[in-house]
Image (cartoon, rainbow over all chains, first blue to last red; front, side, top):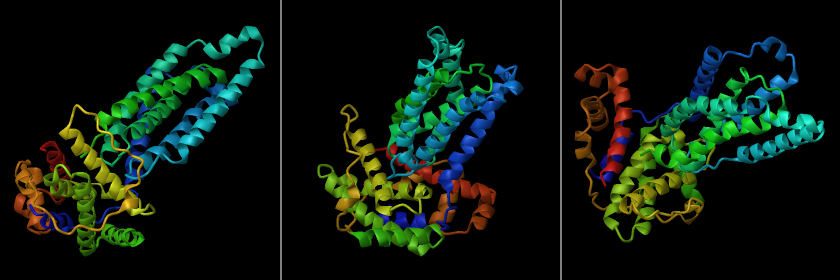
Length: 214
Length: 182
């Protein structure tokens, strides 16, 4: 087939596309992913028993805010990385700055507490389940985001995979926070961050193989 | 080279709004720039050039919804071209890890257009014949024979929605087969 014939073939019929296809494709995946992950947490792990009382405390909302900020930032990065010729953009730098801020505030929290209570602030009682469950809850969302990205056109595959993983991790951690009893910011700064970092790293590792499109 | 950016961008924006004449012009001019780009980078395997031009045009078409209208066009186009080139180089030497810098701004060394296509080695029409009917028939009827979606639906007994999906998925499948059979 000659190239001119290919061009005529591609142009025949309607070449128009609806605008904002990238935002709509990724946004739909995030919305469904968040809803299903929250449902899974509510159905299997159950919301914490004292959720009505806990919702009165600022810490309950901070614990939700940390992953939700990651969701917003990694969505912005994934949207850009889904399009050829764009980099992650300002989201990566903002995320790094906010992580440093989180660690600084958590560090100050530990430093200003009595020495005897410090290990408890960081270790809590549920560190291991927290990390494992956030990482596990992120996996289906990560898979769905990979499917969505493959229908777009990422060309920086590890970066796009990492953004998708961070997005999945943020969604999983936000849903998990409804179940989690821990109420110390240092706990969140260590174990939530680790739980969200695992899918992000996994996304970057799997991307060269699984994000390839043709 | 700014005018290349301006011209191609204007053509694609018209095409995305539904102007098929502008789309032919966009693909033809993009093809000429891609040909120059690949010829320069495939000195040792010149007979791959036209195949890669065709594969990249197919990718531009299948992924045209990822062009953000506020973005510069040539970085988008050359990012796809470079992605396809890396794909080919990897296939040629699977053991050697191909290093093609992602950071060089290829668009800045935009070459003069090359309007003399070589023969392509791979025949996309033959490849099209290997696709299942639900993909092949919509493409043949609408995209090659120029029939309307409604006519194609009547001729095949498929719904109009199935015809549209068949074209869309079929062209993606054609691209996948093309990059598989190098």
